[in-house]
Length: 406
Image 1 (tube, rainbow, N blue to C red):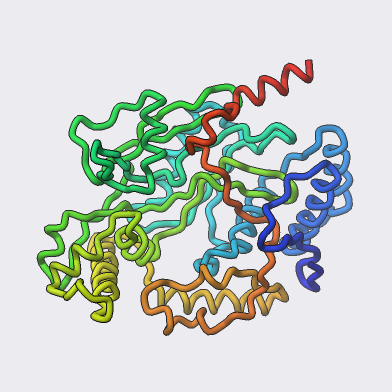
Image 2: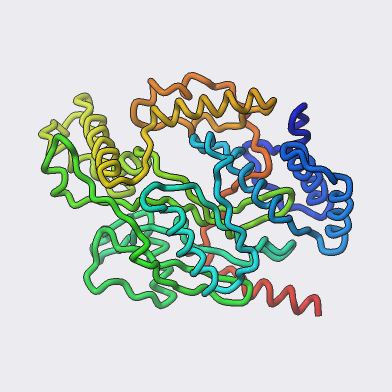
C-alpha cells in the first residue's frame, strides 16, 4: 500500500498466509521493507543498499539484514500484528539479535536469558530474541516446539481425564516420547520442558530453569476461600512458535513477549472448558444457582476470577493490564498511526477483552484496515501434533539440501 509518509507496505488479504515465495517475491518485499526502513528512520543510502540486496538475492535467494534493519523490522512486525491490542508500545520492544546462536545448547541458554530479561523483576518488559533466519527453499534453521516458553503440562490419566492444562496434552506427550521424565508426583501446574531442534540437531528436551519462572498464587480481596482453590499462573507470556517475516526473510525462531492482559488468564486459561474449567467451581463457592443459564452464573464467576487475577498480580508486584486500560491505549495507538499517515491494520474480533467488552472503546471502532501487512508475525503448524510425526526433522531437511548441493 502506498503511503505518503512510509512509502510502500506489502499487504496480503486476511485469509492468506504470509508468502514464502521465489527470489522475485523476496526482492519485491525487500525493496518495500528497505524503503520503509530508510524513510521512517531517515537513513541515507537507500539506492546503494537496494543494489547490494538485489545482488545478494540473485546469488543466494535471500539476504542478511543489518542489525538496525532487523531491530526495526521486528518492531514494525509488532506494530502490524493485527490481533494485538497492546501495540502502542511497539517502539519500545527490546530486540536481542542472536542470529549467530545455532546450537540447541546455545539457544536454550539464550531462552533462559530472555526469561530473565523479560521478567525484569516483575516489571515485565517487551522482548524479542531473534535466532537464525530460515534457509530459502529448505525451512527453519531452528525451531521451538512449545507455543510459549512457559506452559503447564497436561497429564492424560487412565480414565481419559486430564490433570493440568488440557491444551498442552499433545505437547506433554511429545516430550514424553522424546524421553522426558515427568515429576514423580504429578500436579496441575507442572512446568513443561522445552523441545528445541536445529538444522544440525534432532529435537531435544531441555528443562526450563525453574528459578527463572515467576508464578503468582491467585487470591481474591473479598473472598478468602478463593486462595483455597490453589490456582496460580506464570507472570511472563513468551510466544515461541510464530514465524516473523521481514522484507521477504523468515525467522521461524524468534520468541517474544509482552505482559499479560488479565482476562487472558482469568477468562481463557482459567475459565474455558477446554482449559482449567474453573467457572462452575467458583460459581458453586459463591453459592450461585448453576442449574439454569438465566442466572448468569458464568458471567458472575468469570468476573470474580478476573478480579482475583488483577488483584493477585498487583499484590505480587507483577505487571498486568485490565481490558479497559488497554482499550484506551489502543485508541491512542490508532491516533498515533493516523497522525503518521499510516492505516490502522487490525482484526476487530481480537481487539476486545471478554470482560466488560461492551464498554471498551475499541468495540465501537470498526474502521480498521483488515488486510495483513508485512513485516508481521504468522502462526505456524504445531511441530508436536501427532499428524506431523511423519514429517522430516529440520536436520533431515537440511541434510538433504546439503547433499543436493554437493
